[in-house]
Length: 226
Image (cartoon, rainbow, N blue to C red; front, top):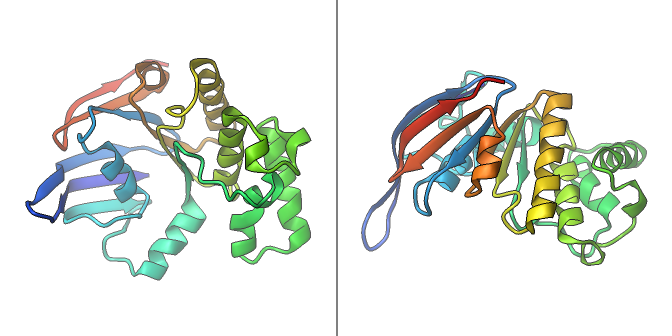
């Protein structure tokens, strides 16, 4: 499902910084994987490359066998739209839109008819247990509720890949545990491939596999028995 072959990423500035250094790994369809490591280890860079938000300096990133590096911007946008859902630490909800409108926005952008958009958004908000909050604005929700809305939005097209960047990092422990349980439940129901970048070892250990990065390289790759 996700394959990286000798992927490196350098950033230019006053000096060149290597964020990823010849990383090769494969994540099969339906696996739930955590990526850990200290700040600056390359975790978010890895996620951005897998999600087609950035391009590697060298090496190849493939999704379903298709190399992202050779795609045009329009082709990458289509891959992100059709195959990848993103969950961010700070929710990234539009403050003037209701929960229903935030979740439905990606579907509006795809040209879905209004009735179908509302039906899917209601279905997803029910799935994340926010059915009674359809018309609430983000500022009227708790942190955990905002993250549930963000997860529902990420699932709007039931993507085969779900990428989460510190999804519990901005939440208290109890709420973070609830969000993690929700992601695990959705993974089990939908069979999506899930990649979670995290500093939280409890989150990491809840996944079937943990990949540890340091200085842009894979230093450990642990598979757990279900």
